[in-house]
Image (cartoon, rainbow, N blue to C red):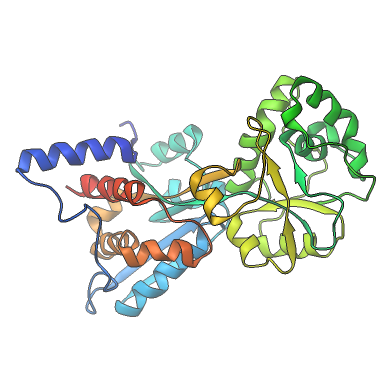
Length: 350
């Protein structure tokens, strides 16, 4: 049996067809309005949510509110990373929902299928901006282009311990496209810190910044061989904040919650050449080059078996649930995009 992966656009169409066949549509604007906490005080069961450390704070906030109104339901939320969440939990049937800071990979879908997880719903729930960071004491760098980041963190930068070590690579890339660099890199110590390979935040950065340049330059690896990432975003923040001329990245919420301890470096748009600061507005509009979507993946077979799980997703997609995205420090979807997510859930449940 092939895995069925429902994504919002297809599900939105299905919802329209269902509504037309029934001679009506969902109530109001098509968005859920449940603000009670979902379910009821007599509901029982357990829900296991694992995956992205980026999305974990959102799910944890939703879970806390849901459990407040449903004390008989135990909701466990963990953040081992997007890849680990799929590989070790969701695709082997251990979790009901997988938090993800990137879309599920084909290889992960194949693993799910091998283990009988064949009915999966993808729900986009928010927007994040991969935030490039340094210490608050670093006044040598204000903006970096994709080529600058590749020159410092890419596979050809193994062993570099000064920002200036990346200047030869940076200059080569800038000669091909001036928008890839914001200029000469300073001769100061380079200390790097960022997520590990199990993280969707790592995968997204590699895909957006590194992959294309590495392939163009004939590199098999996509990051420096001496890269030592960390699964704990708080440890990354501490490392960056504690080293004056550090360089790394985390999700926007972890920067926003630690803005006094670290500084964001603007990112140069590789098309317009503008240096863009990560803010709620630039991330929401897509003006910030390293914007990305956040997701939850739901095992729909388990939804059919668990009223508590169905009620939890209902609540996650309520306006109260939606507010937890910004409450956790991320950017809410537009009304139109949120309605599409809700329609995907409603179509899958019809």
